[in-house]
Image 1 (cartoon, one colour):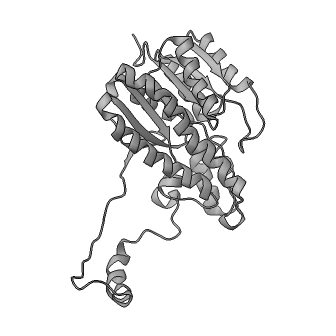
Image 2: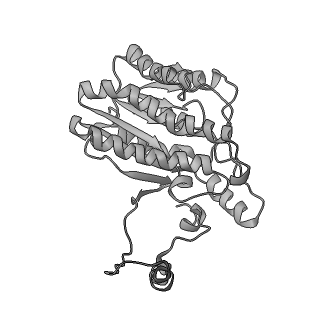
Image 3: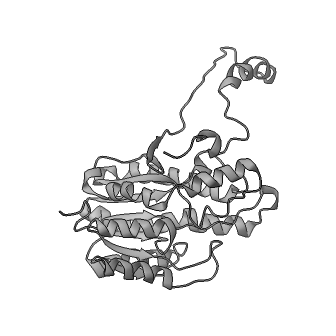
Length: 305
């Protein structure tokens, strides 16, 4: 029986390890030819090692699939374009782009350096722009294509010590929305996935308090392979009418996130003063305020299903 991605070509960034590797293995098993991109950098973005990407390629080929490696840095526009060019040169076309590559440089806000900010934005947000931009001419010409971008609840909800990463990941949602709107008329779709999974990226979460230890325990129960079927579906023709959405995968649970929408409104015909805002507006709005210290553990307090 043919897989859901038979005949498709999928480029996956950050596919040498963790979530990206599981996506590559699964999509290959579903029939896709995979361009495995990974420069093999450390979690903070330094260094480099070709072996993770090559190992993923070797494992796909050993299982009877088709794959090729690319070691480009998504933060560099030329190298990002090379990812798509390699896919087309090796396999003849490009059908889906999975923007999974990411780095972390976590630190509390008042200690965050400009370099910590810039490097994370360059990879996690600008890298998504670079790779997506490179694929767009091919998608436009063939009047089809799927962008699948990895966001995070660090951006959707919030997390401590990740101002750079959170900003980048929420920016990815806005970028995906704009791509979906701009490209709809040529049959190209763009969606986001916020994954819950234990990986190299989540292993840096502190576990100093009982609450943090419980959060890490829950994450360790959620394996990266659980995310792969949704990626395969979104890359397939079965998802041709699914675009401009934000999904999340939490073990065996798939969630659909809302976009920001008004939840309360209050009008004053004579206009507002600061005193009226303090005395009337804020007391009326306060029951619907977001929790000031909210992180994803508050939104998802239950064990993974």
